[in-house]
Structures are given as structure tokens and as C-alpha cells.
Image 1 (cartoon, helix red, strand yellow):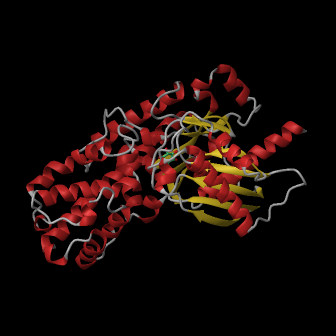
Image 2 (cartoon, protein in one colour):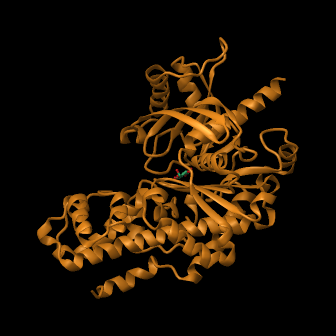
Length: 470
Ligand code: BGC
């Protein structure tokens, strides 16, 4: 089938040329440098105060809390050493009312969930009489971190918009809620899910350079020389390098790459992206995330399909309730169509997931839907690669010995795990940008980064406390 003329005008926004890819990577490197040099930039380049990655020998039992993915999770993690661990966990739903209501109510709910976990599931954690349980808090939103257990919220993302939280220290918000309810737990570490993924991948698989999330949202963390984080100032850098606080010569940096190109200098924003952004609860924010992450791929596809329907090129001009609903379907539809073995499977997905009546689906429609889904998925993967490539290029002069010959990237999230062809397309784009260097990159799934990473960070924090007390 020959695709309608309109497709030709849409494609350039999605099928990125080699030059476009390289330009995006160049801007990415610039924005990363800006974020390291000064506060207040979109790509915030947040120091995590985590000095390096684990080697798999770490042991201990910790409580972890994970807010920022699809659900709130409370977990107990046992690290056995020898790269082994065990997780006991419980998920708690976070309603839209909680996400967008008063922050105090949200944090009370989180504290109640910790309490429910300790009561219902029980914990093997015991402490000496008055010693509270140590908890690692994976909080997957942009936070300006000032210590391993301190950080104020810069902005909400991914459908959260709770009031009176921005600018506040999220560890204190949580600790206050725990204390108000007399829950004997101490939040001793704050960690982003990407930092957790980097630590988790290293714990299970050996030293990684990058941890990335391609899930509801997207972001990446990597290891850099502490001295490149210029905005910390010379005195602080010197203190950190001396190993005084929670860092040494190297530190894990949370890039917050989801906000890359908020200024719209280079990302290929089509009318479908602009519509999505305008109608979102955070317009003009998270520009990169809105083209790459799971929360948005369904919505971009929906915007394209509606345009084709309104142009009477699809389903004979007929829409459906799902298609007419804002965020009516999610990335699961994109994954399903991308992975479909034959046209019959696409037809079934259109009927069952989009609610389009069978009589309106003509033969050519299947191909058109495949095309729309395909370009959205293709661009997401190619853009994901630009972020990884930028870190690879940025770290080139400063990499630790072990990262010179091999670069390992740990990934987690629904897009990385379930979107067919995601990794192969990422590799394709990495090759275009990095040439031969692509060969030294390995990419592997690091499941449960949020839990294991929080446990490992809580361990780092605990050791530092013990050193201080000694
Ligand atoms: C947040 C990041 C987070 C990412 C993946 C983004 O929206 O800003 O902090 O790491 O989602 O969960």
C-alpha cells in the first residue's frame, strides 16, 4: 500500500536523519555541561553524594520506599553479597487525588503504607531497643540534593502535582509524616531511581557507567569526576574529594535528562507533540521525556491517529470513545502493535484496546496504524540513544580505568522492557553517533533498581554514620 501524502509531511519529525541525531547529541553535551557548571538549568545534573558503585559483596537488610513509578512500593531488601539479594514487597496505589492534592496528605499516605507493610507483611529487621529502622527513599522526581539524605523538590513530573511540596526537603516531609504517626523508621538516604538502577546493575553484574530509566518517565545517572561538578564550588569539591562526606574522587550524577531541550532548540516537535505539551499538566517542561517515555507514547500515537481520522484517511473517518479520551490508551498499545506477528493481531488490538468497531477497520487501516505506531516507537528509541551517547562522549576524558574498554549501561522501565525493537534501535542510533565506540557498549536490564539501589544507598549512609560515631 502507498501511504497517504500526509504521512510524508509527518515522517521528518519522527524518522531522524543522521545529522539531526548528531546535532541533538551536541546540544545534549552542552546542556549537561551547563548543568554541572551552575544551578537552575533544565538538565539539572544533580550530585547524588553516592561515591561510586557497589561490587556485589555488600550485605545487610534494609527497608526501601519507591515513589515515582506506576505504584508506591514498600520493600524489604536483603543483600546477601555475592551479587545476590531477596526482595519482599508490597505495592500501594497512588490515586490521582493523592498525586494532585496536598503534599501533606500524600506523605501521610506514604507513611501509612510503610506502617501497613511493617504490620501486614512484617519485617525481619530488628534493631537494638531504641534504634529506628533505616529506610532508603527512592524518590523519582527532580530534586536538588545537598547530601545523601537531603534534597528539595525542584518540580513534579509524570502526572504528579501535589501542592506545597516544591522547594521543600522531601526527606523531611517524609520524616515528619513518619514521626507524626510514631512510626519508628528513619529515612537515612534519598535516591533517584536512575541512581538506584546504576547501583543495582553494578551490584548484580559488575561495574556499570550509566543507569537509565525508560519507563513512565525517563532519566539517566552516570559516574563523573567530582571535580567536574563545578557548581559545588572549590571548597566543597576539595572536601568531597578528600572523602570527608559521602564522596571521593568520583560521584554518581543524576542528569535529569527528561528536561533536555525545554527551550526547544533542537528536538523535532511535531504538531502532535505540541498539542500533547499544551494539554499536559506541566507545559513547557520535560520536553525530552514527552517524546521518549511510556507515559506519553500512547498519547502521541492517539494524536496522530485522530488527525488521520479527522482527515478521513483512517477508519473511514470514525473515532471511538477511547480515541476521543485524553490519555485514552497507553504505551501497551504501542508495544502490542509493534510486536504483532500479523495483521489479524493488529486488528484485534485496534478493536479491543482502541474500541474501534470492526466494520470501520479496512485493510489499509492496519498498515496505517502500524506506520503511526512505528514512527513513534522509532523516534523514542533514537532519542533515547542520543542521551546515552551524550554521556559516553561527555565522560570520555574522565572515565575510570574499568570503563575505558567496556561501557555498561543498566536500564529499567516498561519501555525498555516491553517495547519490541527498543534496544536494537537504540544500538542502531548509537552506532550512527559513536561509530566504532558503539561496540564497547553493553546494555542490560537491571530490574528492581529502585529497591536495591535504595538499600545500597542506605548502606552507604549507615556506614558513614558509623564512621562519624567511631
Ligand atoms: C523524573 C526523574 C526520574 C524519571 C524516571 C522523571 O520524570 O524527573 O527523576 O528518574 O522520571 O522515573
